[in-house]
Image 1 (spheres, one colour):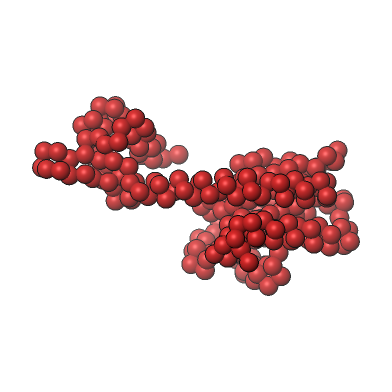
Image 2 (cartoon, rainbow, N blue to C red):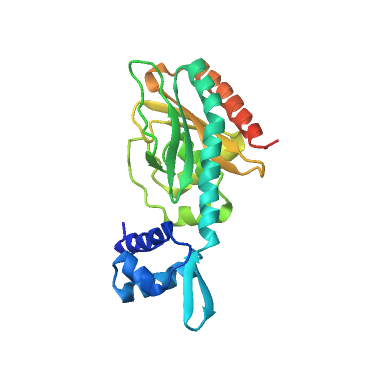
Length: 251
């Protein structure tokens, strides 16, 4: 992580017990050089993370900006929909006895924020907090397909592919075709693109605005695959994603 970023976070941490602080209080509290504090405070103010409170030329202090409240609200909402989705995910997990997971976009990656394992002796293990590039796997590709156009175009223009498995997509044109197909079908399938010997199936979870906020996925060992099994997993996963979306106000 960037040293400047770590120092900026250290400055924000200074406000844990104080509503407002002067520059010199921040220097003393953070134990950082004065020039560093001045530079970082200016950048944090520009980003909306700190706000200057100027009562007079001799009374200038800083407080946390509302941007942090907005970011905190988003984290809170994410935790809320995880809590709301969990009973439905558990029901799907028990019905299929397969790995059920939920992923969201963070930066240019998909992050797995919830999962329920199967009880099979041979099974895929995904860790909560685990990450995947957005071009590999059913949930990541689904999230990429449902990004707003500007963000998706920016991602595709700057993408650097890594060949994770022999089935990983490795060029933009192939990925664009795959994303268009996902949007057309309404769901995503992957075959050993991120994890070898594994197939994945994912549907979008939508909020009350109709925006895709997460991907609900099921992953199975490729040895358990059959067309009949695929159809059942897609049917049940789609119904579950729809039920969660309706709980979130999507109709």
